[in-house]
Amino acid sequence: MISAVLIGVAAALLIWAISAKAGADAPKKADKSQQKAEIIKQLLALSDRETSISGTAAPSRVRSLPNQGTRLAPALQVQRAGLASRYGRNK
Image 1 (cartoon, one colour):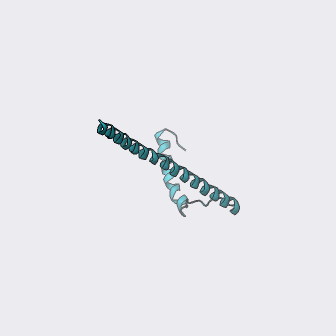
Image 2: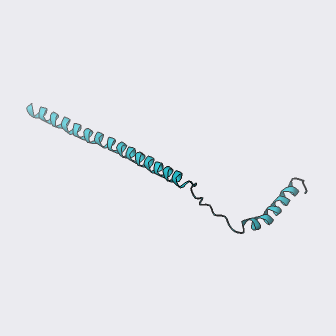
Image 3: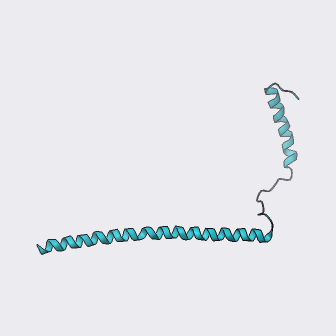
């Protein structure tokens, strides 16, 4: 009789230990994401402060091609002529 009670208590302690361990992992993950969010906020604040101190906008990463206008002009004229003839409009 006593052995059945001890087995029940041991099983209850085992179940409690497993559930406590599983529950302990969840707050750590949430805490890590909160820490990441705080770090990102700090980095954005530093970036904004740096931009305001320098007084200039962030440099554009788009570079223009030197012959872009001269190469596209003939192609656009051909395309416009084709569209005009297709829709019955002539210039």
